[in-house]
Amino acid sequence: MTSSVPPAPTDAPLALDPLALDPLALDPLALDLLELERARLFALLGRLLVAPPDAALLASLRDLRGDFGTPLGAAYDRLAEAARQTGPEPVEREYHALFIGIARGELLPFASYYLTGFLNERPLADLRESLRRLGIERAPGVHEPEDHLGFLCETMAGLIAGLFPATPEAAAEFFTRHIQPWAMRCFADLEAAESARFYRAVGALGRAALETEITAAELPR
Image 1 (cartoon, helix red, strand yellow):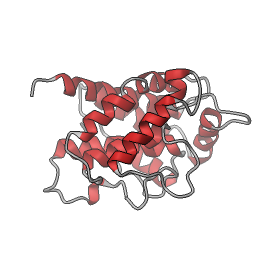
Image 2: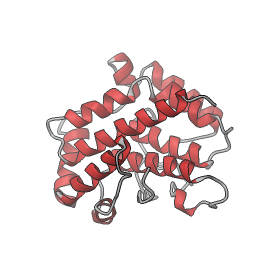
Image 3: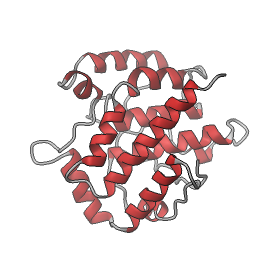
């Protein structure tokens, strides 16, 4: 992985108050480099999915450098190039078309929708039960259901980084149960969306992140 992923800002609409999903602020002795990078990657995906990047975040993304010769490194390089080709106003319009729209956006990035075809169905109830057991709550003032992919990525970041009172195995269990069954299709749809320009690279980064997680989980311990 690259070591230059920018930290996710703490004011993203789905951030889990009172946590600040900035793994760079953690004690470097608490996590190894790989865990820090995993947490930063999911925090970045969560930030980009819950709101369009502002000028400061775009500037950070333009400086990303991926590891040579890896799918994840190529995805980081693609995101950096996409950030160089846009600005705050066009990417905000793009985000609106993709996720908000007049009646609805081009994509509905919710687990319930991808798994059942409807919003607010059983996958959301199952997720809420998992969050209750983990002691995780939605931030005040957030109206999106918790099965929003951005929320799930932020939760993964917090679990990996040890920001929640959970066991070390909690992140893998959460990923397997609530992200792996559907998020790859959502990221692929984002990459192929008609309205996507910058967000095609976000979709590619999301797919690469999930593929890396799945491959790592299959390695012998």
